[in-house]
Image (cartoon, rainbow, N blue to C red):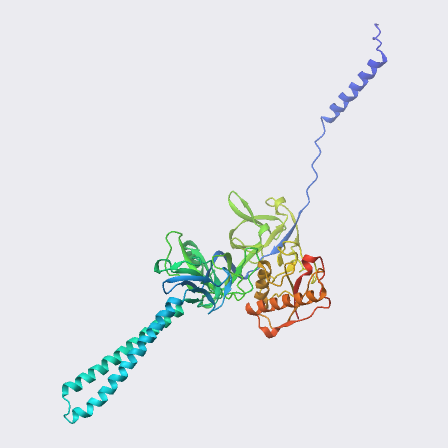
Length: 523
């Protein structure tokens, strides 16, 4: 026999390894592949559907308008001497705005009075002549013609006196027109003409005074939306407030709500073909002048109700190429895809117009992992509680709602009419007791909340560390008095405001915050 070749040790090891691999492959050919582990039920949160009446809020972009914008015009021709008001300031009824040169009109009045005296003297002579003529004519000492002449002279003299008196009245009116006053309370505009201008009918416009309270807020509703509302009301899907008395809230540009609500007072019956809308007007009180004419705001109409509505959280609703749908858990704890027809948004919820019924268990969280017929392990959905309000006395964040970003951390009126700032700081320039634009803005916002309450308001003035003590005490008192006067001017009752002396006239904080006036509302 021929002996088998003897392999080197390294080759023998390789052959053995190959044999083992081949043996493992041959053994594996007869086995089934391993099965994937079975999936358990998908954990989700669900909410049981329950119909209930849902109040609705409609939001529209609006623009403010003065309820009475008065054009101030010169009523006589003449030279304009001086403008006597601050452009853009709030003016009161009867306040002098312009003064014209009165000397020519005074001269006309004096001439008219002199003519009246001359005609009154002529009337006395004519009366005496008539009194003498009458008895002589009765005695036939004078003819009837003499009596008629005396009677005619008397009547002519009386008519001349009446005409002279009318000329005096006209001259007095023209003289009074040289002092031009505001006929209403409101905010003034810029002066159209400069001092020293000759006024005539062609350039008689001087300025405009716009009434600030009440303020009109105009907004438009499209024709399609008006028709949709009518159809839903007829179908019983929408219930409007009785008499159409919506509560109108004003949302400012920063998102805060204006402290006063209003009502719709006018609906334009005509259709605007250019915009395809109908114009509505709401009237709202604006005693502190926070709202100004031609300002853009949002209006919220409250009062409509959608009866027996179904509302689910917005994240429960998904969308596919076929439309919106939700996942529903059936009685056997399996997922079912349910197409739905969606309606309006209600806060964080979505009104479902069709597709769901009372008692349906709608998946709120975990729906993205579901497939049709998947096993489900459901737990009740618990809505997140709203964030707690900030504690009183805390430091507000810069730029947050209720904080004046222009002057450090000055509290402003809260977004809701029932909220009132307990403390407001009004800052002053160094060494001055006059209110600048930032201080006036802070006081207007504060007064808007203070007008509607009846509690005591304490006003305390402070100064910084510069200057001598006596001068600082006087300066702090003047600042407090200026704030009090402005609050009264803005409609806060004077008897509710108390000037309180500070414990130390130097205010707390750095100098730019130390020179201030603090307002505190006694709760």
